[in-house]
Amino acid sequence: MSEGKHAQLLGATVCCSPGYDVYFEDGEDGETGIGPIERALKPKCRDDAVFKRWDGVEATAKDHLDWMRDHAREFADPDKAGFVPQGVKDGVVFEIHPEMTRQGNGNGYFRVSGEVDISPELVVALALDAETLIAEDKTMRYVKMIHSFGDSGQTHLGFWVAAPGLPFNMQDPIDMYTLVPFAWRDSADLSGWRRDADGTLWQIATSLPDEIPTFKPKRGTCWKPSSIRAETRYWAYKLEPLDGGKRTKVTLLCQTQLNGFIFGALVNPVVGQVMAAYIRDFEKVGLRKMREGKADDMIVAAGLK
Image (cartoon, rainbow, N blue to C red):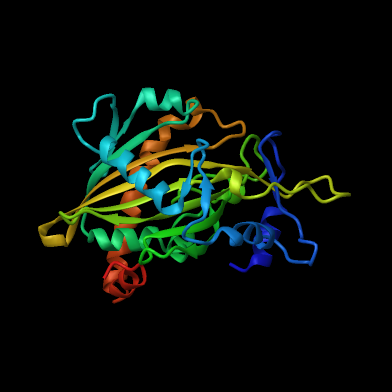
């Protein structure tokens, strides 16, 4: 998707949640969409740069993702207490952690687990591929990797924009444009991967909501081209190799603060099912990439081989 098209899509949406508005407008030099965001982030594209995480902690990009991996190591443990089963979909189990949900302002903290017939490396490569994310998630309308840090491609700084609606081909998000309280959402995230000595891979991410600017709306318009700033608080795949690395035991941990007028009681009952579908969708995409002979190139591009 071109940056110009990105700006046009944002312009079709009305903001509905005061206090969380993030406005997109033409830059002073006429640059649209991502331009002002990227200019704000570029000066910090250094290995020693310090970023403020969603919880106010300041650290380097690498240290933030190491923190996320350490958190995930604890909560992905099947013996970790506090999870409550929600259900099973297509062989994928999904659970919620009520205490972490409470600490997250009612936004569900989920653990989703199952097995897939693709390698851990391919799961990570798919998760880090912007083209795959946009193609397979109908709500994901713009993804850009702005910088890769100097740790062999294991840490990245990116920006994304998601349309209102339900993902993974469940519906066309365009149907939701005018329905309050749904709105576009955006975020700047650190993402990347780590590998343990036993071969376990981790694909991890967390948000930097204060590192990207808020813009004023354009004058003379009654519609505000805007997004609500989302926060990816916790995101981690634990990927354990099975059958010599041909298959994978997947454990996904996730909690996103949606902000706006989306309440946990509204979305928490369905998120687990959506994330279970997410894992199965990734498996299908991975198998297709293998049939097309593209999987190895994606793994190499992600720095995993």
